[in-house]
Amino acid sequence: MFLFSFLQKIGQYALLMRKVFTKPQKWQVFFRQYMAEMNKLGVNSIWIVIIISFFIGAVIVVQIKLNIDSPFMPRFTVGYVSREILILEFSSSIMCLILAGKIGSNIASEIGTMKVTEQIDALEIMGVNSANYIILPKITSLMTFVPVLTVLSIFCGIVGGYAVCVFGGIMPADDYEYGIQTMFKPFYVYYAIVKTIVFAFIIASVASYYGYNAKGGSLDVGKASTDSVVMSSILILVADLLITQLMMG
Image (cartoon, rainbow, N blue to C red; front, top):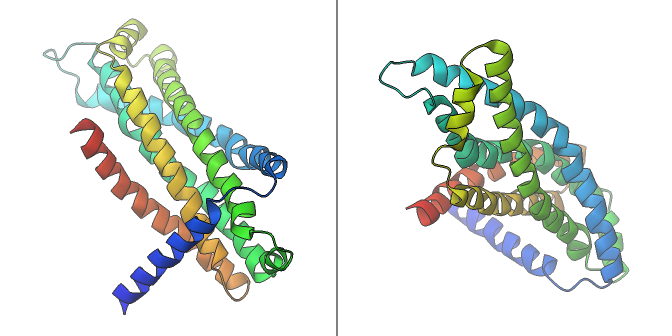
């Protein structure tokens, strides 16, 4: 039964994406929706990204300094390792898991509410492709803006590490700066951006699927929201492993 249910969900998801990725009926309406979703889903997430990244960057520097403090280890190691952690995993993967909770639940609950209050049925009756009209702007805006949030997260994490060096006296700021610049590989930034584009698609499309297929009342909307966050998080971790193997292997 579990396998049948799983395959059924994959089929429903594929059919929904087929409806989503069609030519918009009115490009002007699509771009207006696109900008509104970018503001609602992306711009409104900037502050949580800044705050979390700043303090996590500071904590990473403190932890690394305390745990690898050795006369055999170059002093710039703390900055170097902090930068690699931020670029390769935290700002690209862990931040997307956090966004899956914030943005994914928002999308699923919004579309789920439209579904159970029959707003989506009303659009279909009027001859509007409801999946394309509602979901496509969310997916495209998120895939556009999440890479921006990732770059911002990397920057804020590095600034947080620098701040704890200057104001916390954990280590000389010059050594941290040198470590940040040592053996930098621009490819890692491209790798992080590619990952976040894929993760943004997963967050938006999975949340939209659960919201679009919600049935019943408000309790079912809440369940759809929870299920979307759980499934998005699992798929992000799986995709993270696959992309890392493909791009870094």
